[in-house]
Length: 400
Image: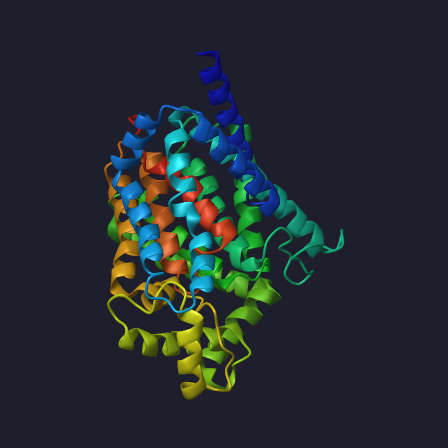
């Protein structure tokens, strides 16, 4: 009994620590994950844990998604790269089920507060670098101040954090005046920070998040919601475009490079378009089960040498759907989409508004952002996806 209580306390503090640490450091996040997994393996009560996992369709979908990658090693030529991919995706069969069995509904607010505190710290350092009060460090530059991770990961995570803050402002009826002022300040400062950093996928995710939030605030008022979206989104976009040199440059370059991608093979937009076109050529040849878990680089190189020899080869098409379709075909894509299907389905049946709203926005943002990068392969964005999914889609009976 004492041992059980001590483990529960250890898991409680480790989960809070993980929520805080993972947006700040890969090493710290991995260290806590190792401790959580080790303690979980020696904690016993395996039958109860297994029942929790197999009785949740999202858990089954996640495990199947990973196992399809393992099966895909059978027909892959580059077995070593296939092992690399399966290693990067171990969260879906390892960490996700473990966290799912450990999360407790009474601690959800603590997990989220810990996460938002970490994002606040990243934001503060971002501004300190941007105003040149401190020297840039790690990933940051003065022009693109994202110190703890690259802008590719930072902006999507920031967009989700902004949603959590705004949801608290709009829907927490018990919020104090002091807390309301505090959250309002950070909602504004985080939104500004979104456009002084360079992650375009996160910025798109931000606009998607704002649109969904408007529908959630103006519940069942579809015409009014659409009208509000058509006003607010352009206002935010053009305000950011005028105020942020970096955002203006990124938008202008995206438009220019899209229109002239065949001569812009050194830009992120030009490369992504070429990745998509060449990936489609591979997909046409192997539509059902793909080329195997490890053969994207090999097969892409073959197509690239013929179709676009002036463009560099790739190990990742920077599009989650293209990557899965090339590797595992329609079988893999169906498995991937089943994860999001069950997330959305489980969010709809929740009786708790917070769980329902946040449980819907998480998959929607990822479904959009994965068009421009493989966000379920990256450390930070995959960990955020798994961490929040592990408590958003449990069968919590919690009144709104």
